[in-house]
Image (spheres, rainbow, N blue to C red):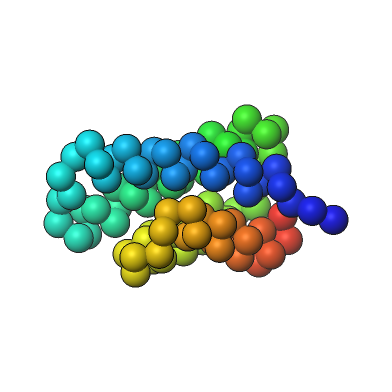
Length: 96
């Protein structure tokens, strides 16, 4: 069984939104930057699943976005962070 709809649907909106914010605005203090990225991630996650007509399990969005923010903070590329965190969240929450 494959899970392309989740990873593909989250990939473009989230990476694009984060890239736009990071390049269009100077980054605020570390805590504010993390919160901004987290909020963008949550919005992208929600929009992508809503567009796909899927309802994620409770806690999945928070888990995936915390993972994403942590990885981006460690200088992992946006695409790699998103792919890794989408895979981890899908596996942990048994969601496809």
